Image (tube, rainbow, N blue to C red; front, side, top):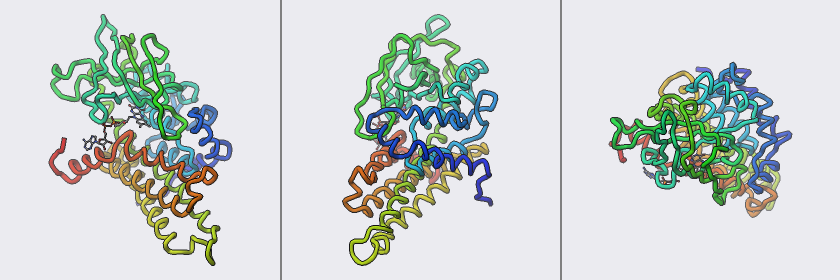
Length: 386
Ligand SMILES: Cc1cc2nc3c(=O)[nH]c(=O)nc-3n(C[C@H](O)[C@H](O)[C@H](O)COP(=O)(O)OP(=O)(O)OC[C@H]3O[C@@H](n4cnc5c(N)ncnc54)[C@H](O)[C@@H]3O)c2cc1C
């Protein structure tokens, strides 16, 4: 068994630290506080060729896989500069298009998205459906050989900076389908189209990406906008479940390490009795536990990415990685806050600022309970709870 990264993977992993020479945590935080997207940084990542890691080379990508995308995210998060847009755009939307889009769709959308000049957001959540995707009511009604899309999506990350949304809608009502996963279709929707309104959601969490509620009122979409087959969108969505978990786990692993690095630097210097506080076991042990949890979670994350890229069942490892990484990151940030004493709560040290993001990742986009239910049912074999 070889745990080493290839030279190319190592370079991708280290890219975050190069990027942080220009776009560091201070830049990220300033953008986050203004709720302003890190446009320059995004375009730089595109210019450097990293947005299309999972896209075929023919369309401007690198033709690599989930492992490389996870390494990119983890490397950026190690520096405290992770982006949710990397999840909803390059990992979910662009990867779907690359593997399920038509030749025309790929040529039309992917090169600009790989370059960072166009962007996708991803819209599945609805106010009345939440974690239960089966209950979504956004509908695309047939209208001649086209469709009229109507409904509401909420918590859509980056809908203001995105040019397109990948929208999950019902094309056949629930009571007319044979299988409960039938009847859903994935549409590429140009967000400038007539009939679309967006309202910002005032969030308490400082991140550069804003969340939006999108209202669709009889928006015209056609067969050229459908990814895959009409009514069969769920089979494509299944492909994105594990990547979503893996990329979010990578984000947590990196942010946890970033917090611990800061805590170690602080605790090694800060002296209030006779020796640096980092020499006391009461300070060391929580940090050592958090470090161990992060590295264990990171190993499971890589296993999940490896399984996904090799076409092996990746659900068990992806769910366990997402659970373990979010919990490890929360504990790492909490331990780092404690090691900083009062300074853990100051803007100057920026430690408490890390908490909302890692705490978010216990709840969304995928909550801890749904993940644990998966593990209980599919890994342990317990009866289904819902
Ligand atoms: C910052 C942020 C960004 C987001 N970005 C996007 C995006 O880009 N696109 C998008 O489509 N969505 C996005 N979401 C939405 C996110 O995916 C949803 O918040 C999530 O799916 C949960 O839905 P809900 O908020 O309605 O919670 P609910 O479904 O109402 O769940 C509330 C709580 O109930 C519990 N719960 C729910 N179901 C179960 C169960 N079966 N068993 C046990 N406990 C359960 C969990 O603790 C859960 O936290 C984002 C959300 C946030 C906060």
